[in-house]
Length: 476
Image (cartoon, rainbow, N blue to C red):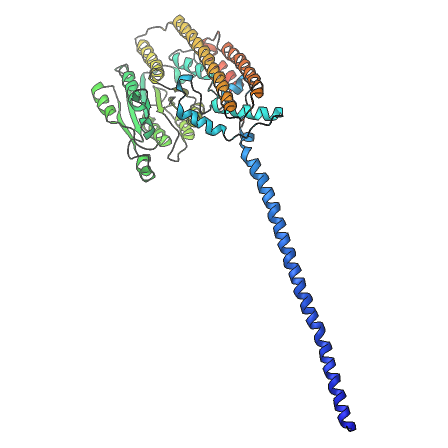
């Protein structure tokens, strides 16, 4: 082999070695990169798994918390008179005879939201469970101010009354606004609420003096309760009678046509009443409005705002609002309407109670007739009537406290049957029940003492005192 051949061979070997040396790091780097990527993916997967596990733990904890967090939102059990007067009525303030399979099932469904109470339950846990029970059966205890307003209404015509709306004027105008929404078709005993309302209104109107003007306005009496008929029903507001002197045949003819149908345009019917009353200024006219409703506004209006506007109008009507067999939501709205308008709110759960409210107006009408004939009021009779009212108020407190106490006992035994609480834990609930029972007895006594020895000159002063003392917003 000559020198040239040897040189070419050496150069070739050198080049091959160099190439293989340069290629080796690339392959290793590729392998390392591949391994690094695998580790990175694996690390990411582990992170994701850890994150999922952590998230699951958080969600589980959150779910555990959410499962019972409604206890934190339940209103506290009151401890004073103002608290009991303003407490939110529960969904099951029932007498023993009214409990049936349906409402028992509803209560059991509510109780099943509770987890079994731990054997070593803390005072806070006992309090939370008791508060929840209480919220289900809480009663609507009488408000002394409501009775004061009724007395003031009953003193119509007395020149010592500070509110000129209650002074007799030459003209007397009465308008009844009747809710004809579909829910008025519900039965109380053997009659629908609408039938009971119409009978009570008819009996009331028959007592109206010939010189008085009457009007009858109905709302929600067309369409149905379906979404498709909402616009039609909300627009259904009609003055079917008056303003005119009472004619029984014509009035009853219009009254008989009304049937429960659709929605509840409460704000709009008050607006129309305000418009119609413009010609009857308060200087020359005593104006009285009765609203009979079984539910809240459902057509998007603000009846509280409109009620205040109506009360502030030149007619300055006295607005009597009767919540007929209402739930707690409707009661709250209707009472606020009365409070904002300086009107009178009352509840009626049956025909007897509804007629009783209209009877108060009949007495005022009789007094107005007597006033026009220059007759004097029998002050002694008024004092006696007020005494009976205080007795009735006392009985109402007693009955509602008895029913509430009995229902707490009933529901704690349901908890025991469902094994949500143990037998030996009942004594903790009984102790709390007894404490509330005693507090309500004290509240009853305090409220009744406020109503004693009231004379007509002090009505306004006492109204303000009771309002400041008791009419506080319930705390949630």
